[in-house]
Image 1: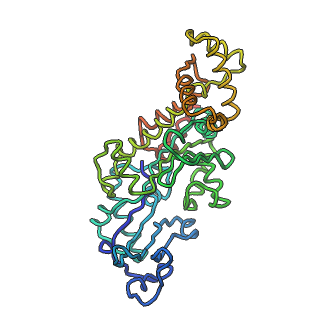
Image 2: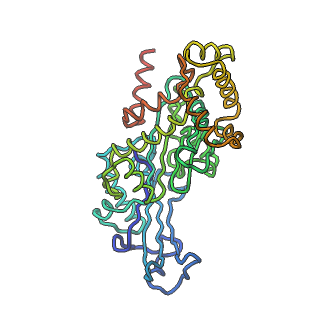
Length: 388
């Protein structure tokens, strides 16, 4: 599914009918009477939804009108950033489907008009996409919590696999982010993020939460609800083209063409698979003691030699304490070749069962890819209450 999208329109694709709605006013961009271009040879006029509007259930996109010099000519562009489900549902728990596209365009067009900008339907439909966030909400109804998943995912070696430069496991363990400047892979506890937004949005994973702060309150008073959210954020047009090419997606990065279920699913599954492949089974095995681990290794890996068994025992104890990235950092003086040889060997170790199958639930949700709707969950809870 798609959440946030950024559309970038050139100056012949939109008309501003109320310059004063922007700060500073966009009037000077066209009349050329004021506004010096900044150090980056551009000036930006913004218009964002206010907290009061969001609390009153009024959602609007974030707009930026920029004037810059390109090829020795002045150009004016309009950047439209918005959450698609918040635009049409007032929340991003409900997930959009392909048939929602017409409603998205008409709603966006009306919102833009209220904000003093006219855009033809055809221009919105074919608008270039400069950033896009693919997402999936995973309902946890088996007693597990997002923290349990995030803690396991944080042990994966995804940084090395995707050449990422930073991993954040923060907010008391309620969010996990793998990132570079051009894209991010994010997992977080949806409910905890909303709870933090009631205090301040400065430490939340997503923004403009004021419109949905009370979304789950009625459900929580009836039964506990846990929601793990996965997002893949492609933050540059070049990265969108790159990943489309890598996955063989035959689509131009324009709004109409990227608004497809199969594209969302393919991208989320691709990054999920990278995460899964960077997590050896040994990390998910939780023995009660080294004696239990030793027995498991001997029984399920009969070809292992004593030296190899001791090697696995040492590795397991080290990564359980340090995590796989810190462990690798500490042994880097022995060279990359030795690490890759060890890691390849460790990934082949088999266990009769994994104590916490961290990837099963997520893989099932991404494979089935059924849209999550709040009303469906409410109905299921009511049916459960009747059966109890």
